Image (cartoon, rainbow, N blue to C red):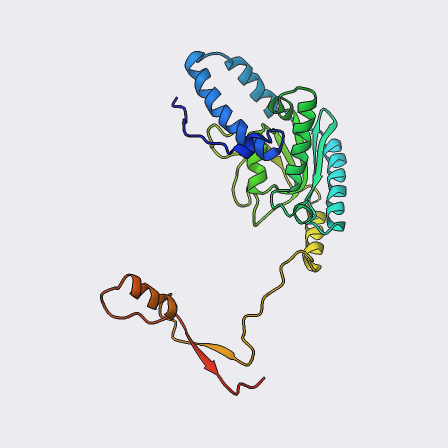
Length: 279
């Protein structure tokens, strides 16, 4: 097995190893190097333990009553997000019937696009492990994530890295879903990137969809204001033909920098000034 020697972790990530972003970056670096070293020095060591861990993960599944109870709490977090002007997603991370982390979207509140509900909960889990001097991967391999919406690709990758065995979620995430809707991170063949995990979907899915619809129907105060593109007193229209994909100004600049041979190209559209246009 060859060891990747060119793995670089940013210095700011090293300084915040107890955050979700720093932990994932640092753990990925160390896991690659330790895996290579152990395979060279002790090629047979740990095989039985690894098999036992796989069996535990495959048989690890909460009962229907537990799923219903924990998902109800996750939906409470989603409602809290909606009330605070956030995309209504809430989640819990449960270990041995104890909530180690819970979160809701905080993207608008923090102005940080990575503060998804799963990342907020994951930071709490890492802090819980740090206070008790426990290895996060050992704890997370017995931890279930309950979340109202399918995790995005970013969050699904993070869950795979920390060894989560099971994710229970409500509705699909058709635009950004990382658990099958867009990419199938849990089942993908991704060497040295954690362990695959199972998913249980469709828990109160209709309710999750309705909450999302409620959010997107209302005005988002954090959305940027549209900028006016028309100049005062002037109106423009687009006139055919649509022959190729070069704007006249771009075409002129390209010919100046890098003249081309052959017949001239026709611009994609022509902008002409209109006068006396009826309102």
